[in-house]
Image 1: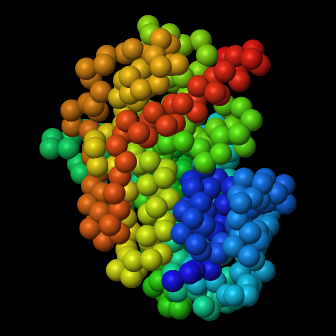
Image 2: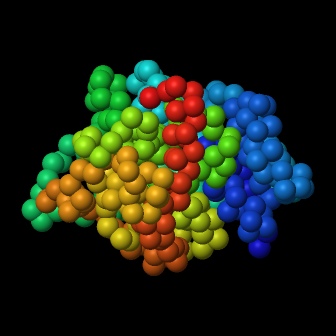
Length: 358
C-alpha cells in the first residue's frame, strides 16, 4: 500500500531518516518545517525524489491554534501522520515553557487539526521518548529496574515549571505531550488510532552531514559524543564523563520503526520502548568502539577504563521485546552505530581545527 504521509519537524536529525525510510519505501510525503529556507534545504538534500512524491509545508509556530490546518489539506488525502516535531537542545538558554509548550500544545494542536481537516487519516505515529518512561531520580536498585512500555516518568507538571534542571523539564515535556495524545484519542474518539515510539539516546550518522555547518549545530545526542570523545584537544589521559542516558537506539533503526508503526495493524493503540538489543551505550563503551573502529580517532579518544564499559551495578535497563515481537524490528550492532557516527565526527573535528575552534 502506497501511503500519503504528513511528517512534522521534517528537517530534524531523526526526521530526516524517517523521511528517507518512507521515500525509499515508495510512499508520498509532505514534510512540515518552520521556514521556507528549511524546506529549500530539505528539497536539496532529497532532490532525487520528484515533486509528486515529496512536497513541503511551512508551520512557523506549532503552538498556534490551527497551525496545521492548511498543511493537512492534500490531494490525494493523507492517511498517515508522523509527528516528530519537539524541542531538544540543552545548549540553548530555553525557559521551562519553551520546552513544555511546543511539545504539549504542538501535539494536541495537530491531533485537533487532523480530526477537523483530515478525516482520511487512520494512524498517527508520535515520536515520544524514553524520557516519558524513566524515573530519573530512582537511583540504583537490586535487582536493577528493567523499564518497559507500562512505565511512566513520575515527574509532575508543577515540578517541571519551577525546576532549574532542564533535563527534568525535557522529560516532563515528553511525558505530558504523550499523555495528552492518549487522552485525546480516548476522549475525542477520532477516526485514527495512535502509536507512540519511545526511544532512549539516539545515536548514529546524520543523514546528510554536509547540511550541518559546524559541530555546535550537531544534534544533542551526537554532540554529546563529539564533545566528550572526539572534539579537538582531547587526548588519551582525559577523563570520560558519564552520559545522561545509557540505553540507546540507532537513528536508522528508529526511522525503520516509524515506518513499521504505520504498516503493522497490531501496533495501533500501543507504545514501544525502542532500545537496542546488545546492552547499554556508556561513553566508555563508545570510546572503546571509536578507538577500535575509527583509526583517525584512535590516538586522541580518552582511554578511561576500557574494562568498565557497562553501567554501574544496579543501574536501570530497558526491554525492546515488544518492538521486536509486534513491529518485527531488528537492531544494528553497536559497533556499526558508533563507527558510522564516528567517521562523520572526524570531519567535524577537522572543520573545527581549521576554524581554530576547541
